[in-house]
Amino acid sequence: MVRAVTGGERAKPTPLSRPLRVVWIAPRDPVPQADTFRIERVPSSVYDLVLWEVDFIREVLAPFDVAYSHVEHPSQLEPCHIVVCSRNHYRRKDISRGLRRARPTIVFHLSDEYGRDAAWIKFLKDYPLVLRQYNFDSYPYHRSIKPIPLGYMVGMIEGPSTTTEIMDALGDRERQYTWSFVGGVKKGKRRAVLKTFDEIRPHFIGALHPAEMAEVYRNSNFVLCPAGDFNILCFRNFEASVCGAIPVVGGTTRERYLEATEPLGDPPWIFHESWKEGLEEVRALLADERALRARRMKVLAWWAAELDRTRNRIGSMLGPLARR
Image (cartoon, rainbow, N blue to C red; front, side, top):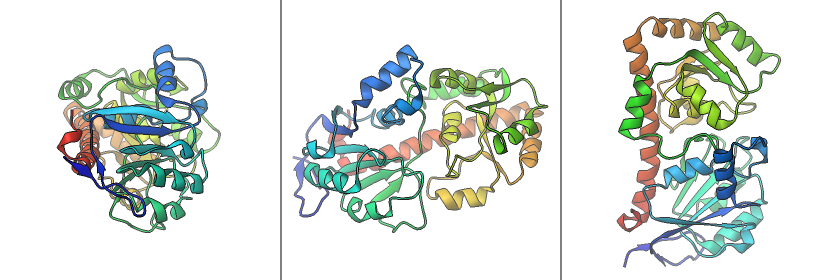
């Protein structure tokens, strides 16, 4: 019998049976909420959703034989293989106690955008594999804690994002827009960025449901990606990559970005300290169709590689019995 060494102080190995139990901790069950939001395109705010990453996590775990369940509070956890939690809904003490009860092999730790979770590392390091968003130099390093991409907004896509057929189709398709920006246009930095690129047309600017956003990105050569409200990492960068659009990241250099996000890999995005310099690289690629398509394919290949790297870590930890 294959056994997985589960985490938590004085934890004992647990028999690894199929299907693997994956438990979401959230005030409401995020799976039906996500499905309704995507299928019906309900006009509710994305900020009403309890987890933005539901579809992304399900895609990551698609190769594995899993069964999802949900608890409303960490105290309701029972032994399972994988726990998915956001740092936004519960106290650190409650998550720690719940994980000790569940003794999972893998923990997904989401939503630490502001770098406030250094104290969480003290108990997260007890688990064989912790997959978490964002990376901060101020956090203590532990070999079992690995970064993952932010993923993409719930409701954006359904099904796989990286099959050969999908990547070829996205790389080859004709694109209606030279560039796009989906989101609120605030005064100040965002407005200045959009003004810099305004002369390159046609382009798209506006707020959309995530499913509609995906269609715009699939029809865009470039997506403008200003920094998030707090962190240099932004969902928009990854959402553009999933659609085969090239993220244009201004206000930072590639070297500074990699230093802040290491070891996520080196994405083939456009980086420039100045948005005007980014505009010039965009112009050069638009003038060379072969180079433009090659860059789009590199972006898609990078996304597929990041997804595979995460899956390989999960597979290595759980063993061949976990695969479908």
